[in-house]
Image (cartoon, rainbow, N blue to C red):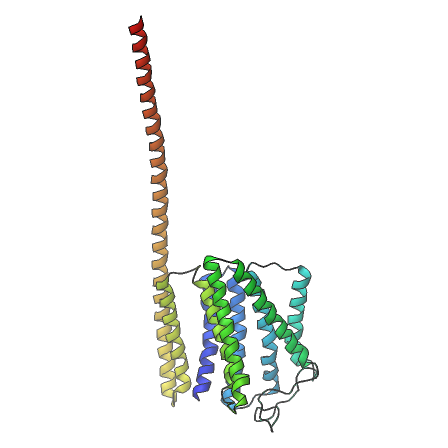
Length: 335
């Protein structure tokens, strides 16, 4: 397997893992649910590119699946952004965006209107220019226009929310913007800039480039809401090691080594799960103790406040008693 193919496969596994990682840390949260589905679509999109890079060819069906995934996960990320930035849009706008996303997701399968039905045996739509993209149909510009429109709205919503936000919310939005910018730069560089200089072997990295958006978005979700640093580092370490071990079976030259690698991966997965579970329980215990301390501190503060009130009442009573005694004494002296 080529190094390039290993990088693409690793990106696909990591994308799926990020979605699982975010989802299971708060399964009931809508933001995490949408992100998990978004990550799954990205992972599938990258995996198709992995097959393409590995075999040097891909049939027309999978080529169209790859093109159908782009508007799907982009539209899904648009709705995630609305939820993330607490933005509300009109129902008609929501419906139009949803229906448009569905239409352009199925558009590659609508005959030859958007994409050609065939891809050559070498994976090129045009054997002379050796471009790996399937040939486009007459309505393909509409497909591109929709993608550009969604991206423009995403950028507008994020920038507008960034200007109005402050504190941790501002940092969260900055994470998402940074991930989007890096992903866009990588995609443009490997798909448009490098081919101008005759460097086309890295064009398959445009799909893994979306991993930066996923990674920074996952950080935006988790860093300021869910975990302490120790748990984050533990989970990332276990997850990263698991990815490396998951790739080993594909690199082994013999069946014995492949089976050994799979056994090692299973053994590590069990131990990694127990390690993360222990870290979570430790954090939960810590949070429980902190909560009890906070409750006890609050009780002591309330009791102290009551004592201060009693003290003030008692002192005030003594002062008034002393004043009355002085008045009585004065009256007795006059009489």
